[in-house]
Amino acid sequence: MAKKILVVDDEPHFVRLAQINLERAGYEVVTAIDGKDALKKVEVAKPDLVVLDMEMPHMDGFEVLQNLRKNPATRELPVILMTSPHGDVMRDWQSDIDDYIMKPYNPDQLNSIVKRLLAAQDGDEANREEVNTAIPTPPPDRLAQPVTWWRTIEEVWRKIGF
Image 1 (cartoon, one colour):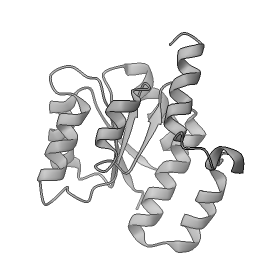
Image 2 (cartoon, helix red, strand yellow):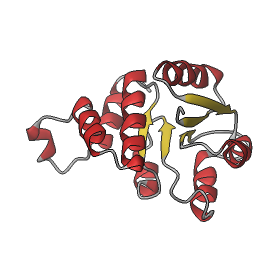
Image 3 (tube, one colour):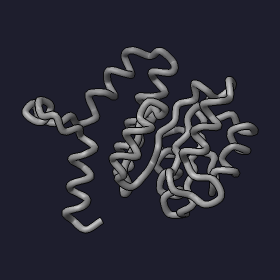
Image 4 (cartoon, helix red, strand yellow):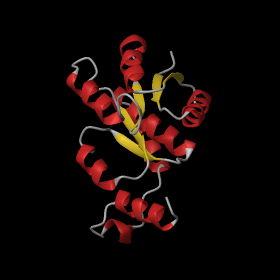
């Protein structure tokens, strides 16, 4: 049986992009258009993983995340936060999310993160290692610097006008 992923975003093109690529990768995809809809879909669809936009009407991604983490039934549900770069905000929530991806994102990167988190959830060590090597890591000299990778991405976005 295919793993079920809930994709939550108020921007239909991001939802559709994620849905198409995740379905091509063999996952069953359920979608929601805002935070309230997401919490209902989590309860009904029982997804294996959630891809969650941060900025949405009615209830933002952080409120949804808080609700998921408070509920014993969804406390361990893997959550990938999908957002535009907000370094300071991300730092505050890093312990509550399993991973995050910046918009606009590379669909292959999203698929890799999903595969890695689901493999970790299933305890599939071989698959986890395979996926981890597929995600590019910064060069060694960048790892030695005190600047975190998300701060670097934020600086790049600022330079190109986002």
